Length: 295
Image (cartoon, rainbow, N blue to C red):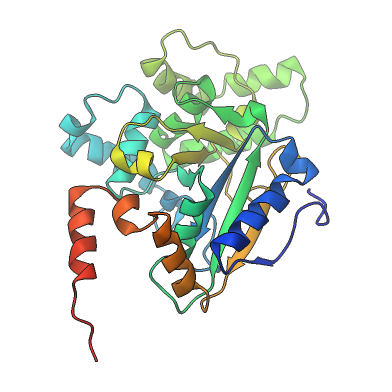
């Protein structure tokens, strides 16, 4: 785990100046200096857990079923999506819970999401660092493996998790037993739907590592938010970040500071309209701006 002295703890952010100072301080830490990329995620409530949406308030067997139903009933919307990652990104864009944890490469955007619309709670801003080998492009083999786990049943995922935990060493016999597991073979079947030449060289760590996945600039919202995703196969997200190759830093935005910081971010054109440039969201933003304030 990361030594608590190596990353600034408990920083309070009340202004854009505070934000810039915090980013500089964290990036100057040895662990973050070695990172290939850093990304940010903001929560409007500091008590909010770092969980992908599919792990929130849904039944254990929901993941496979909800994505299958969406692809069945709205298949025309996914015609241009070649990979499961692309399908999950589009599904999440339309509010379907997925295994992708959305992040931003822009600290100003991260700060915006830590403000939210609720000024009764303190917000929280996270910064994550990723070693170069944890940074993946959308068409990578690792991403195909992780995203196609969404097509497994909850029992198959649990069986695969148990199979991973039983591999205690690099012993070829143990690894081969893992690769021949029924759930692993089924996962490979799904991966080869999009990657026919995919080789059976999967190791347990491939399914239990957190990766930063760069997003294709395929929709206006991802572009506006400098969006990317944290993805993992079988991890429970109980502890996201905190290792030498995946460091994490946190800062608090107090509820008292939210209104002023929101106004400062407006000076940098960081607001609801620019973060959500879809027509429906822009119209909602304009209507809200002209709403009569109740007395």
